[in-house]
Image 1 (spheres, rainbow, N blue to C red):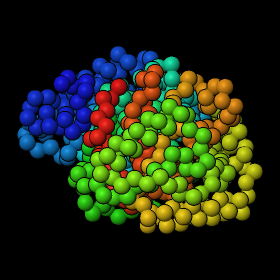
Image 2 (cartoon, rainbow, N blue to C red; image 1 turned 60 degrees about the vertical axis):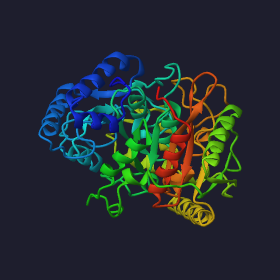
Image 3 (tube, one colour; image 1 turned 135 degrees about the vertical axis):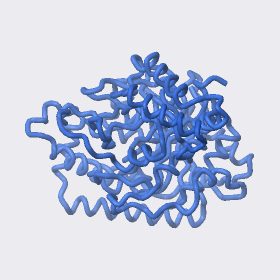
Length: 460
């Protein structure tokens, strides 16, 4: 197997035997960036010199038999939403001044450094990560490595595209309404949104209770390994959870056969593309054949889009209010409409939306007293033409209209993961979403691992 196809876990095994070195792996990732990123546009910043310095340090640690973690020396990337010491964090916006001190690491970046990951650079995002595709006036359009005419999804589309194209084995994205899971589904990789607070955030996101960070990788084992790194506490996040009581890299081995899964093909209100529905149905049947007890059941809630819109638009308005005066003309026109709408909502509207979010969480909590996990499509449509916020000709006007399987579980703060389930006739990836009760990140990973075993997936 060539180093292009190696997972992070396989790279580390090769480091341990001396078959490969972190420097070789890093050079391979940088070559892939040079070869492919001109077309895909997954990175907005690449720092080859810094990456090679990190790789050389990791190589010395492996040579001395003293690696500092289970991912020491693995090439990775980080979405340009997270503060990163020494690199600008522009969040896809032309309104954020580049010429300022960049002296603080976010918790995510700090943990990656401590674990010895080789961070190649920062990945693209739409402005303030506001939508389900990845393009911006600052960085341009990010395209799907499987078919560059199509979108990679978003808002962590740069991270998903980088991982799918072997431009780094791992990445970390953010997910406020599906932004890790949507591009994971579209690009054919694994993307996880853990329980809210599992990965600490700093500074606090204006999207508040919706905001999550999540690991992205080409397989479930690597996703678990990266979550082990990212899930360590950081005092700067007052909503952060206590340390995990066990390693996620061990949790993926849990035997989940005999557990009860609810399969909801449409959540009771989603119009799903027939080809997507058939692929997901087949993947669910594979889980059932492997021993998971699957029952078809809807959770029983109506589309919470209106409440989500209040929380999302208010958060966007708060974020954009901090931009320098005169920024309005530079802001993405779609985002500018969200900014304006956010200012129309009152404190009462926000509290009403918060109450609906809480009620949804209670409903799902009760649902999970009967079902261990919930299975759904990740996205009800295949990837569409790049450069559009919604599928051309769909009659839709805003991105949440085509992502109804993802944002409800930001509102409930439950762990959910997108795992490759198959491909369309035209070769485009399709994801299956696995949702678990709050704090059951280990269970979600274990079911995802079972799916990966019964439906082996060759990454693009």
